[in-house]
Image (cartoon, rainbow, N blue to C red; front, side, top):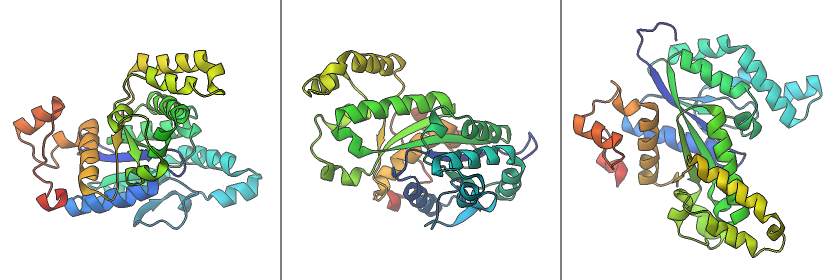
Length: 294
């Protein structure tokens, strides 16, 4: 992707802990984008990802396989995955050669679920940084299972992880609460959904934790964690039901604003639409078929 005069490419780096629905998201989002008329290339960056349900344009397993690394170096799955990412970082020419012929496509990068890759390990961040040098403009789409909303302690933990990820990855960022179609099966929420998506006054969560004999002993620690989250005031979530087209469209609007796609030459925007996006107002992309929103 050399040449400063070339049109920038856009895409999403789909990250999140194991089981949060990253691969399912890539499948659903790729189908939605193709229905809109965008050319999509899904790139699997997870060497442990087998039996991919989507059409894969680039697969990191062609470069390095997790099972081979584990056998050769006698590593466990966690250490093996970290080595695979370090190996990819050291062989980015391979990745660039695979991506160059796909110039003009919208990219979806299905990333590994190893949490430390997005919170403190440097390889994945370095890979994203190099992609930026190739004029590939990414938004980090961080998926978190919505069932964590049913447990105040787990939700605070998710907020800390999300904040650490946002600060470490250094990309435009959109946090998603995935599997919203299943949230009713997880139990009743202590507050309405807006409380969790907008990350409102977290002192109410502390009161809930204080009622638990175990967490009562850690109130000061929880207070400091909550204070840290609120001091940064960065974390918020968009609820996602990947089966619902309107939900997927809301996510895509947020992603396209974050990486600048909606202001690019790929889709013509009126000045009114651009200003409403910049002001944070709801707006409708003219290229979104009405049938997709119904």
